[in-house]
Length: 306
Image 1 (cartoon, rainbow, N blue to C red):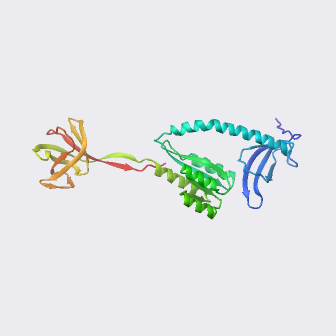
Image 2 (image 1 turned 180 degrees about the vertical axis):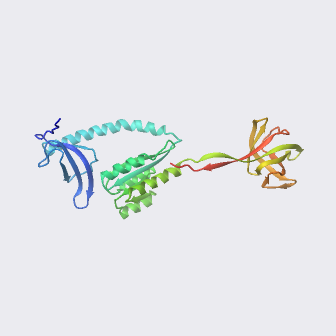
Image 3 (image 1 turned 90 degrees about the vertical axis):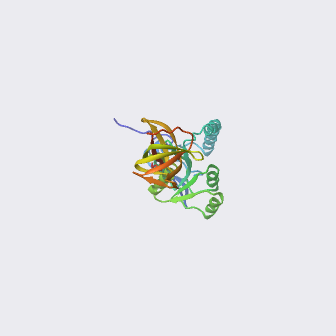
């Protein structure tokens, strides 16, 4: 099957790249899909300059009859965008009010040298988030960091990422004044690694019980001032004064709590090892019986990784 593009019409196609050049200003590389733009035929790439804004890769372009017609089309489309934004604002307020407190969010503003870098970086960092943490790109654009970027970052507690763009000293001073972090990169994987590190630090650690020892109850002493003192024999591990205690009776859990005191004879001690006797008292009012097992454990927090 022979596929042919229409040549005898005004050109239309797509933006494949854009950048800001010191000499040329904003420029974009386009690919013609149909029609002819001067000497450029279908499937031919062309470069245009003199734009007043940076287009995104994938944006569609079309050649019109005059600048007047182009302005009319732009004004009409801007009005549509404005109306759509107004419609979305109320929804966004509702979304923010229902933000899940279980999810931590890192907001970033991304500024790059070319649109290709923006797309590559955005795609990579979007994959880093999990249910508990996510990365939100508030704004991304080609070009240097502006005052508006810094003020947006301040208002939203965002971090600014600059890839292959220089940061003006005035911008750095403003960012420092506003308490905004700016991170500069020229290697993509270093930026990705830093974002992974940021998100990892935001992950809530996992709390895990670690069993440290157990003791059997041999005798109960009623001391009027101190309450019941439980005479125990440490059968394995160690009992520490800062241990949390589970009281097990007949294989069933009957109490959980903290140690109030740990003694060897009349001396307060920090820990008692295996095959030694000790006296303990527990916080709270509990009916301890001879034969009960005291299981000592500690809560350990483990860092998580993405």
